[in-house]
Length: 391
Image (cartoon, rainbow, N blue to C red):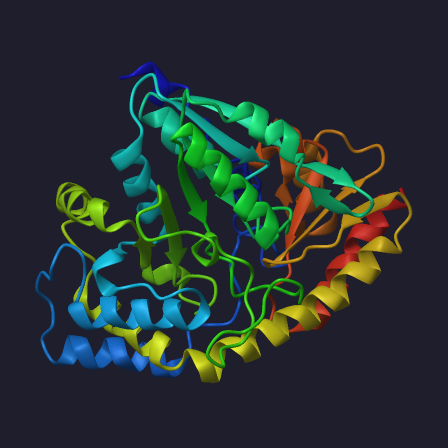
């Protein structure tokens, strides 16, 4: 077995969740998903597809009608994107891995903005690339990017820059001006940008996010400032904005020159996404205008329920998320986030994700997924945390 594989860390979120196995009394907020099921109109589309016998392979790059729907959806939010630039993938994480396989290999340098979902630093490491970490900083109740530090780290040696914004776990979001600065710099260095924008629709700010074509607002995207042939790959998922975490469906927006290569990589990874899952995704896109804004409104209400209660606890520092579905906070004196998360499960019946799961930069922090259809669960969770904080 390769050393890079042997050195991969196990999931510390799963480690905490496993500690709660068999317990029905735990309020679980550790995983990055809503507790709402996928909407019925999406589930019904998959059922119809199966009943119609659509159980065969599709094109590597996805059903033509789904690729066109993704292009139309994206163009409604950003600059126009053609269907020829769309690749349908078997989940967002598959999209990101395909992007990395296409762009990086042994010995290449990959810069990643951290803390971040651990897959984004593990994927280049699996492929033998050298990962350089540039950390956000928690300042004044929010996470900030030191742009000078990032630009210093990205040099002509840097093959790929990976940026996740809105960010998991911090909720940090890039401004359009920052995206322009990053893209201009990467043009000069010849660096590819891989942008994980799966949380773009779950955005709570208003600056820099004027709606396009009547669509509801979303976070700024690199697609807003890039040209079609720029060295930019944008990864998306149906998981978060369409409540489809278990379906495993995503997509990539790539330059036209990269589409054929991505299709080949899909053949050697998964061949294609299941047709009935693609039909579900198509239904989600067709119903997005009537569903996604309401979901974001509910998530905003959950955020606004949880954060003030967390901030009111003694010794708690919480950063206000601009996007995503997470409250990221720390408790004074609790510097071992994994041990504390396990204590919360064992002694308070509260399940949170340890910050160290997202990198050493996030040690001492905890992530709380507030995507709950019942906000009273959030308040109940705060009471359980409060009992531990006051010990």
